[in-house]
Image (cartoon, rainbow, N blue to C red; front, side):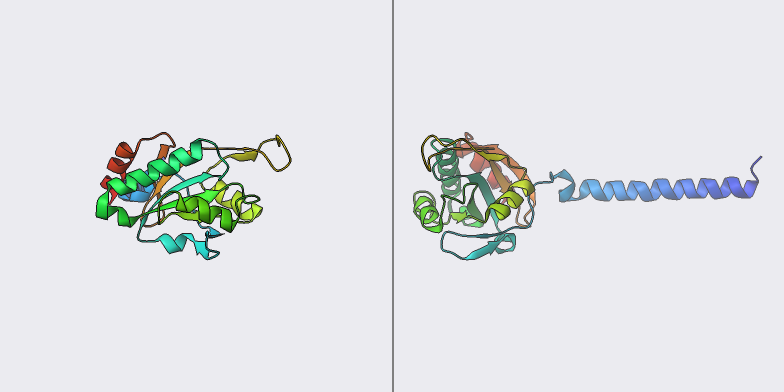
Length: 195
């Protein structure tokens, strides 16, 4: 039989664990990070002007990030057009949102190609590329699938890829996402809640 001392000590330890655990749980539930998925993270890429860019360059702004490739026939231009229109619908508040395009085809999407492509969409669009290793790393961080398809002719191929627009917070953390088919109006409405 346990002594009174051991019983009291066990009760005190159990109560302390419950109170401490409850405090930690409440603290975790109240933190904005608890609602976020494990999407995003550090990256070091090059923009369409040849400038090195990291995720830190976007702190203080919301980011709309889309992974794709310039020679994409439909999903990529649709996503970027919807992102552009959504930002424009926000008016002056849209200045706090940076549209970002990260290529999954750095072999063909050179700085020059990305520069011309970005100009067709939003004036503040950051078109980013990296080495194959950097591309694979940032895709893993954002849980993006991509794979080069078989060539239909020399140098002509498609890239199968996830088609998701990520909304990232001012601290770089994941907030929500959209499909490439999400229309500008609901996208703008969701972004406005986070401004």
